[in-house]
Image (tube, rainbow, N blue to C red; front, side, top):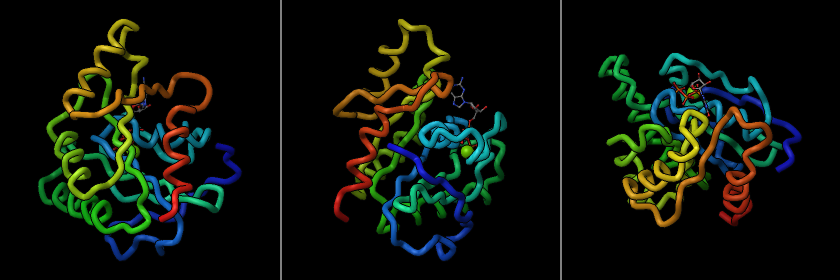
Length: 195
Ligand SMILES: Nc1nc2c(ncn2[C@@H]2O[C@H](COP(=O)(O)OP(=O)(O)OP(=O)(O)O)[C@@H](O)[C@H]2O)c(=O)[nH]1
Ligand SMILES: [Mg+2]
């Protein structure tokens, strides 16, 4: 995918702030600190379009980006961060669920799972929930650079089993040079599909 332009549109704290539904959307979900914002930057070959942080809980709002004036990338707030107060967590959950359930232009959810730990209970819950609402999901295993070579396949298999996937998840590392072509290969048909 040739990226001609990538711009931040807005951050939404409530569903009525979501931008008008015109362009197809790809959303990125996963637990806090798993590497969602970093993956968006590497797919777009931009270093700092999306803010990333070693401190979990960086992305607290739903952030919308417009790519090539053709589609949106949507960075969802991470879940499972223990230090967030319960009422804030509930509010995030409501916001994410409202987006995932109601967004008409949503074409695909990229669910990112940490390759070292495998899916958490919340990852499994989200996957089941997305299946229930018949939302297409692409599973990406992040941070594979943190695994020894021989462990990668084993961990991918574990993720496949834990989430009952029909295919092996895609492995990703933001430290590798070049663009994550395999992920693009899966996303492009979703973006180009008729609504
Ligand atoms: N080694 C390694 N570190 C990574 C990788 N991807 C992300 N990180 C690091 O993990 C930390 C969290 O990355 P983010 O992209 O901010 O994570 P996030 O999922 O957006 O987190 P929240 O916004 O809190 O939900 C940062 O310090 C990144 O540099 C990777 O593939 N390999
Ligand atoms: Mg983030």
